[in-house]
Length: 292
Image (tube, rainbow, N blue to C red; front, side, top):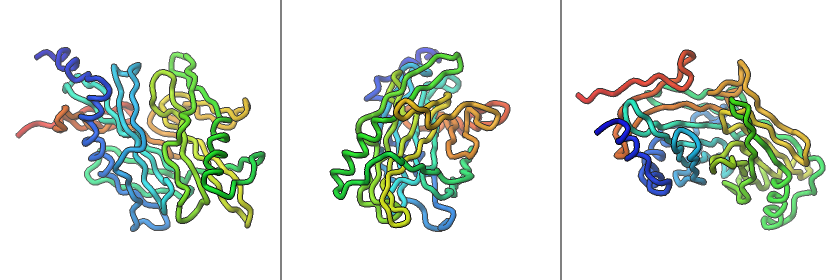
């Protein structure tokens, strides 16, 4: 069988590919142990049921993946998109990990026998929505408010060739947490997705929090793309992430965001190669695994 034919056989429709790859995505996510710096011995809770599945047929033939969250007292503290794309040498699916810190406190991340690492250097800062109404008294009322506030955010990305891609808000939040045990009164994690597919490009947290005895709405944006990103609220730019010597393909300046190719597997999940991101090869050097 030629490599080309094998690649074509691996290019299954989105739903069939997603069903085949999901167990391997879950396996990848469970390799991580994540905690906050103040409690390194208390791992965050991984939700093994993905909160979102996505695909993008415009990149590398077909990228397909899912999004996982890790919870701290019921609220999302870390996020990962584990996805795959066709790989030719060796022929299989390349598994890619895309991570982002969500907790206000710095995370401590470990993974046994890993060739790539993720070392966040800070927590994710929130900003007050100063012109937003006070949070409603009921969970239903607050959800309606969060949806309306999220709709005020728009964005676009720009690829390396300078082409602009409009981003659109996914109306339903990826994750809602009205019963968080600490830190917030209520919150929801939204995303802006690409018009080229359904993959998340920008993360948008909207939370109700009590500060000095007063309830208020706060927000935070996060990079979830390798492209330049710009976010506006009410047509005024409020956040951006543009590539630079410290904001690279693989990470942002504080390493809140990290992406790397990690493995190559076949559709049965057999490990064919390991991949390591280096300064020389930013998308990763491939190290085939020999059968012995």
